[in-house]
Image (tube, rainbow, N blue to C red):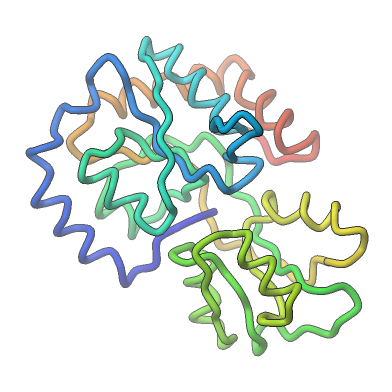
Length: 249
């Protein structure tokens, strides 16, 4: 799943130190601002009404309900999603974000609400693609971009996931590496134009990101996630959005 690359961590850690006192306790207001990207279906996307939709919208609303909180939804570009959490523009990140040691140095996490799942390489069908030595597209500041950068392949980064797919289609990249859950619907709808050409297990589970100072909010969300796991609601929701074959708890 999505993750910041190590090189950006040091600067963000400084942001936490400078702004921690200013935002401490802010998230415990009656209304919790849920920050997401709105561009990564089926996790999150903007629907025809201009509203945040998807698995994480349904999940976030249910978590807030169980935690006794009111949700308000905020969208933010992926590459600045952590700095804007730290600075207080919203109170959680719920955006397909992997729990990683690097990010945990900057913000805090709830327990995972989506289990680890594989990343896929996708390229044009019928082509011979060297995923270890070719040109591979990935979204900026993701765990996939970090993996490609260290794999020996040539990394080309794009700000949005849509741009990574377009790069493959127009020949800028041999393949894209991204979450399988994001790529498979695109492959299935491509009428045979695109195909899976490789697989990697590089991500951890997905959790809500919160500021280090918001321990109370983390505890409330942890309890709500735990209750959804216990009563089976979370697995039902995962299958609704990702299919009956999706990995569940």
